[in-house]
Amino acid sequence: TAGGAALGATAAGVGKKLFDPGMPTPTERIPLMQQAEKYKFPFVTPAQRTGDRGFWQTEKALKMTERGGHLLGDLRTAQRGAVDAVAANAIGVPGPALTKETIKQAEQQANALYGPLTHIGAFPRDPIIRRELQNIGARHKEVEPLTKWLVNKVKFMNGAEFASELQGIRDEMHSAYGQGAAGKAAANAFKKVHNAFEAYGDRALGTIGSSSNPQALTALESMRQGRELWGAIHRVKPAFDPAVGGLDVKKFLRKDEAKHLNLGSSKVDRRVADLREAAETWRGLQPPDDLFRTSNTPEGILALMQTGRTHNPLLRIMNATNIGQALHNYQDEKLIENYLAKAGQPAILGRMPGNALARRLLP
Image (cartoon, rainbow, N blue to C red; front, side, top):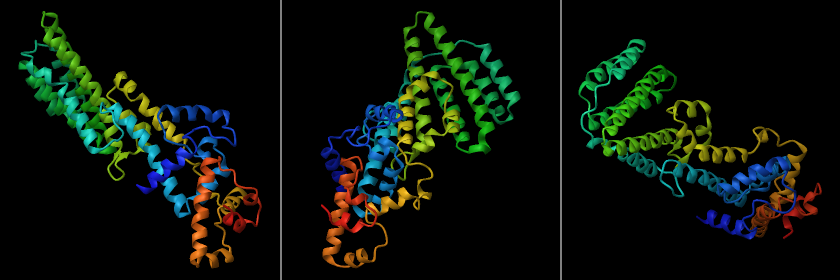
């Protein structure tokens, strides 16, 4: 897009540096900048780098200009895109974007990892799983019909049927989680069935493999990899926002989401560790929550004056003319580029109260 090209040009003009000259980066924000560099955030603004409220107010005022609104909007989109790239990698589909197609491809890969199970014959009898299923069904009426079904199925289980039943349990579990608070009790019950059934599969394949059947051990390792991948997918997919075509970072970071979508595997937590860190970095780069309630503070008023956004009658008259509008647009261009390239330090005249018009007309 034109905005994206402009963002690239502006970033290139300052060397794509995260640490720009001007106001030093506060010590407490240096780790945040290092994380932004680690996860390839394309550029950070002076306000994001320093956390300075005056800079945040300047950005707020610059967003009111056509040029600043487009450029800063494109920059925020690019930063979220950096998180999307980490999310795509977490679900096993490395690439620059997180899309519906990306998630579908990851699901296909996860299912494929259960493929070797279809070549495994009869599972050995296992009294443990029957007892566990009966106990779960007795304590949780939501899953009692399912547990009775599975108690009969495990009498004559093989690899292919195990894979099919396991997928069915997983679908039921995440369907219940999708119902929110209303489905929480059922979801927790399905999770207990899921965990018990997977442990049953582990025992069965381990027993078959110990009988000099390397194919069973290969299937066991592949199933564990699939389990880990499915765990990561179910951490990412519910936070995908089709409206923007990427991750809803705030939703992903909610603790309740992270908790109820985690199947209890520490490997899953490690798999999404980079994503959580990148998402936390994104959150650290957002403006203060009370920024939009402080326009009338001294720094807010000064920011508006520096960008010519005060209600100056002379400016309104000038903007009604072609030459005035051209000067207006030209100065908007310079304001945003000066802010991004020089850490937001305005020219001397721009810092003087009452000289917004002079600041606007200066190149």
